[in-house]
Length: 276
Image 1 (cartoon, rainbow, N blue to C red):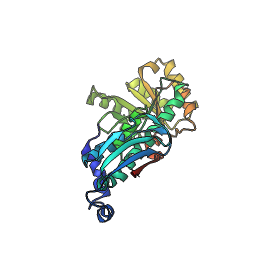
Image 2 (cartoon, rainbow, N blue to C red):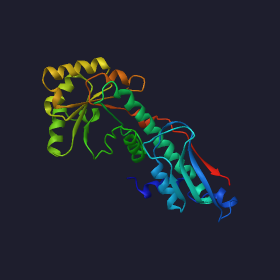
Image 3 (cartoon, one colour):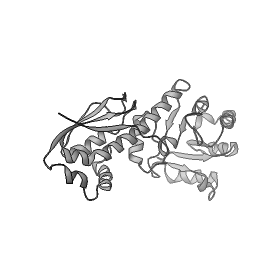
Image 4 (spheres, rainbow, N blue to C red):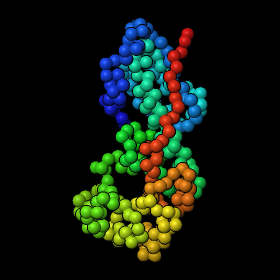
């Protein structure tokens, strides 16, 4: 669960000295009602976080939809009632959170459903290409995807820059000795290195920036050496909504995309004051 203190940092950034516009023109004791409305169809996320922020400032917030739910354009997502200044203070931060998280959740669900009919065993995963990691990872989960690593502390992922300093076999051996509880994943860019990683005992092999044809060749080689069932295969790099189906046809376990977070389009959502 995302903490209130984490969310308040965004609000403090947006109003370091208060909302001077509302403070200047809105009566201090004025109460009002408002609604948050979806301006497009998709998978909503971030309502729980928005509710936490509004309630922290004494505003009653009633969810009319649940995070992870598909919603339609024009649907009311939340009803608000309370001090007008406080509603306006939280407005933009809450909408930014809902918009960002819903955008990630919507795109994740879209890709998950796109490959489900082709290969239901494949999991769609995000990456660490985000500065809003807590929000983005939760949104990926709500969209039906896998968050991948939350941080560098979660799992061992040996990448090209590590292998520029240490040999592949030595890196896996050291990783295995470091912890018996952590998954050991290795990023490779060639058939030779994929076989080396499997032979050395990697748990997951990430095939980076490869075409479907190159991946198929590696899968066949792993099967010939009876290594395929001993490792999970993740494909990553250069994968998009347009070409993901060609990767979903392969015998892989995970498709990871940085595009779920680094270039996702925000979900359109607005807050409107309800006039009596």
